[in-house]
Length: 462
View 1 (cartoon, helix red, strand yellow):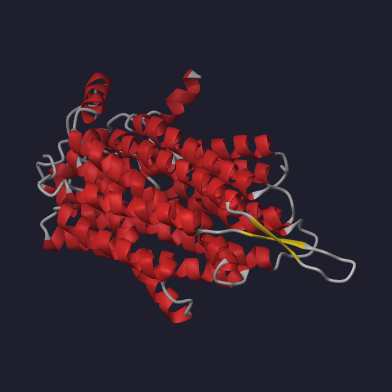
View 2 (tube, rainbow, N blue to C red; view 1 turned 90 degrees about the vertical axis):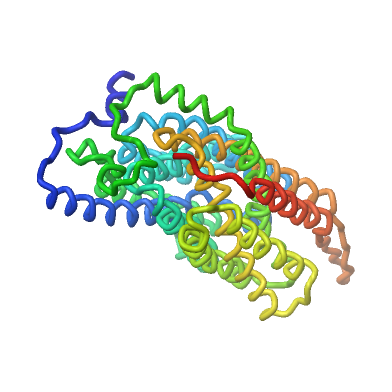
C-alpha cells in the first residue's frame, strides 16, 4: 500500500531553473500539451461513462433488462461518480495528476469490458458503480492541472476549452458508438456488447496518451509557480506544500455559503443534463418516431453545439465581465432553459427540433462549465481546487443519479399495453408516457437558474 501511495503522490520540487528564456519556453510547451491532453483524454474517457445510455434500447429490446432495471443500473454509475468525484477530489490535491488521471481511465475501461459480459442486474449495477468511481479520477485531476498551470485571469478561457471535452465525449458516444452498434461487425457479439467493447478500447488508448503527455506541478520540473511566471498574485501556489495546510483549506471550503448554493444549482442542472443524455434518445425514438441512429444524431447536435458553448462562456466571462461568472450564468441559463419548451412541447418538425437542441446544448455546456466547477474554483483557495471540484461533484451526481432512477420509475409506471389482433397472433406492444418526467426535467432547470442568479454579487477570491 505504501508503494501505491508513493506512486500516486505529488512529486517533490526540483532545483529551480534560473534561465528565464528556458522557463518561458518550458511553460509554453507544457501548457500547450496539458490543455490539449486533458481535453482529449477527458473527452475520450467520457465514452466509457456514457456507453450504457446508447445501448439502453438494445438492452431492453433484447429482453436483458427492463426500463426500471436499466434506470437502476444507470443511477449506480452516477452515485459511484458522486462519491468518486468527492473522495478523489480530495486526493487529487495531494497527487501526481499524470498518474492519477491515467489510472482512472484504465480502470474505467476494465469495468466496461466487464459490463459486456454481464446479464445479471446486481452484477451490472456493481460494475457500473465502480465505473463511476473510477471516472471520478478525471475531473479533479484535470482541474488540479488547470489550477497549477493557468492563472486567475485566464482560467475561464482555458476551463472553457477543457469543458468542451464533455461535448466531444458525448458526440463520440451518441454518434460514433451509436453508428457502430447499429451495424456491428459479424461475429463480434450482440450490438449491446459491442457498445461496451469499443468505449473500453478507446479508454485504454486515452490512458496511454495521458500518461505520456500530462505533467505534475510546474515546481516538479524546476519551474516557478504559474503565479510567479505570470505575475498573478491571485494564485499563491509557490509556498511549500504542507499536508496540514492543504487539509485546513479543504475543510474551509465547506464553510462558504456560496459554495453550497453553487452545489445545489449544479445538482439541479445535472438532473436536466443527464435526463437528456440518458433518456433523450429513447424519447425521440418512442415519442417522436426516429430510429436509433437518427435519434442519437439529434442528441449529437446538442453536444456539438456544446463545444462552442464552453469556449464562448469562458471568453465572455473573462473578457466581457472581467472574470465575473454570475452575469454569464444568467445568459447561458436562459439559453439552456427556453429551448426545452420547444423540444418537449413544440412541433415534431426536424428543423425546429434540431435548432432547439443546438441552442439548448450551447447554453447547457456554458452554464455547466461554471456551475460544474469553474465558479467554485474561483471562490475556493487555489491549492485545494480538487476538493472544491469534488464537493460540487458529489452534489451534481447525486442529483444526476436520482434523476436516472426517478425518471426510469416514472416512465416504467406510465407503461401502456396495446394488444394487436393479427389472426391467431396477438402481439402486445408497450408504450410509455413521458409527460410527468418532462415536468421533472424542466422544473429542475428552472430551480438551477434561480439559484445561480442569486449569487450575482459573488466574486472570485484572491
